[in-house]
Image 1 (cartoon, rainbow, N blue to C red):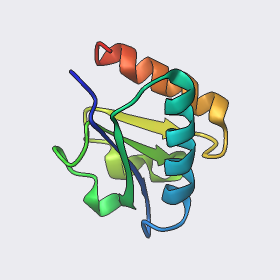
Image 2: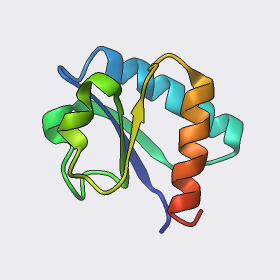
Image 3: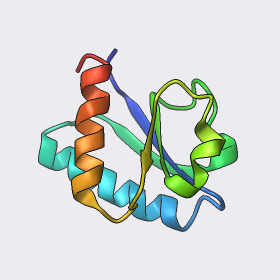
Length: 95
């Protein structure tokens, strides 16, 4: 499956999701991944089909629990954790 869109979510869609989005964009660049749209929004927008996978902080894991492809971050500021989990997600999705 070719990843085309990643959605970063938080409760209000403007705080931590924006910070995570910027980190995702930076890590994707480091990984050499291009052509992937990264957006940020509220957890209520995290619905099947809205993105190929979703990224949230551990405090919001319940909101994406039923989605098949998600990354739950213990530390939303850790680019190391983010990169490890992005690499694992891309591997899971066959990229």
